[in-house]
Image (cartoon, rainbow, N blue to C red; front, side, top):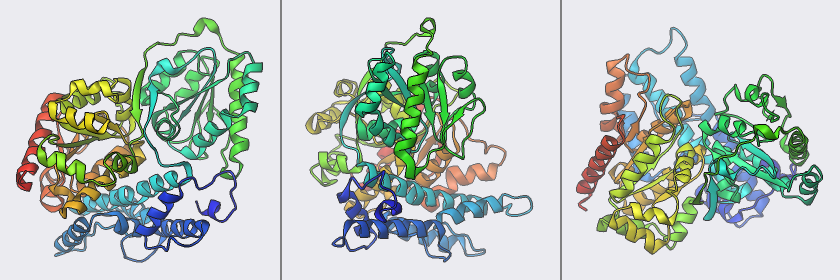
Length: 530
């Protein structure tokens, strides 16, 4: 964003000026200045939050978090520091990570509460800092997601086309590939190679990014990455970082598929590496697409089998889109919760886990929740699972209770809302914060609950922690590796509830999980007097 504002990078531009101004206003920046000047000031505040060296909390957290939650964090710090200094408000996004890495070095911090408090501090730096900044800046540069209908599952692969899958988590690359793929030059090259054109597809969270913003079909979530190559019809899988199985390059070698890595942080044995440079984005995208066209010519038709399964999905529910559907205010959603048409809201996040049946917990949990008039929102691999299962269509209202059905019909929305990639979990925090501020209550007072029912990656742990630190109870499955300490288990499942309002609970059965979630939601409704 800084380089775009300074005119140093002309491969990208500011696409959502309104979003830029909203972010700037939150940060106290004059929005009457020239657009690039506003963008530069916003970028500099973000960079400062990553590297400043004073003890003040990061500015993005203070600008976005609900007032009552900030007050609570400060009170918790005072309570925890009665005997020894223990803080949870992040001072600097990078600093908190360095701090916790030092504490876990041999011979440093060995008190459970102190270690977990610093873990909370690092997680808050993620949820209300790094991830939130990434989401906001990506909206500014690539456009804020709005509602659109898309397709999901392996059936989106078309053997008559050059098929390119983008997989990973950084839309800076995938957005540029979307742009270049659509060019007449690249489409013509594909036709000259014997294909009907180029079919760009998403996978995992990079797929979610271009699904939400550009309507690009998504082939699947993390455990579909190998299956997509095995269809024999993927000409190139281009990856950046996170959730990319190391064996994918070797698997691609069994077919004609060109497996292309692009990040200096993520190299793969047997893969092709084309370094992505932001200031040469168009040039890099062309090289990648040309590799895919070359690979198309090496296809072995005897190895091609593409499943026909695919589902429609209505996606693009950013906070801005949700507010637009509600008429510009959170009041309508508050009203239907008060009336009991919607009992509460569950946010589901996270991964597929190879140790459990793919998508089973995600889909079963979601269906059971909406049948009990609980609206479901979420991100990441869960969102793709729900899309593949047909739960993000208007037909899915036939699976809901009468109350939720009436709300969905009135607002013309499905009962299951796709809010983005894993980094976009911050959208759920912002939405919860807006409702809390509207009601002048804390987030922990709201009938909200979270879940990571097939969690797999470390970032899912961070997401869960910043949810509980923000006052939202969170369900986890499988069991995290904490059972070696009764003290740690007690802090995470009981003590933290008294301090922050949020806490973890473990359950391996989807129906029992929903029963616990409904119990939590009804308890919060009772306390609110609704």
